[in-house]
Structures are given as C-alpha cells and as structure tokens.
Length: 71
Image (cartoon, rainbow, N blue to C red; front, side):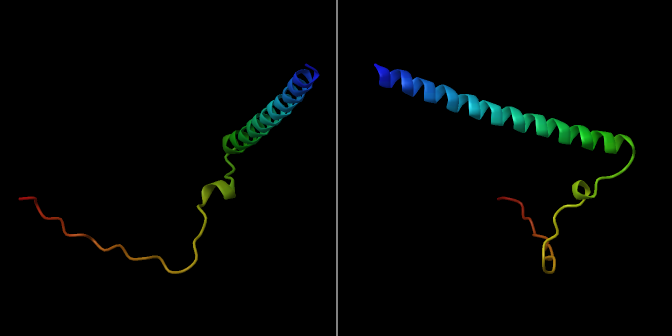
C-alpha cells in the first residue's frame, strides 16, 4: 500500500515539473514573438528572420521538362 502512495507522489511531482517546463517554454515564446512584433512595428527588420540559410556550392540549374499529352 505504501508503494502505491509513493509511486503516485513521484508521478505527481514529475508531471508538475513537466508542466512547469512547458509553461516556461510558452512564456519564452511569447516574449520572443512580442519582441519581434515590436521591432517590426518600429520598421526595423530582424536580419536573422529575413534571409534563409545559405547553402554551400553552386546552385543547380533547373531543366524544363517536356510534357506530352496522354493518349
């Protein structure tokens, strides 16, 4: 009987810790999105959001495929 109570207590603290981490992640995301919105409202671009990641090497040329009608 004591084992069931101790196991439930451990599970409750684990779930509380996981919930706290999720809440912290949501709060940090809200702060980040608020900062981005303020900067965009002031007209200042955020460089790391504007450009995609660059890939090394030469870009590949796109070859146009010839499409034929089906019989």
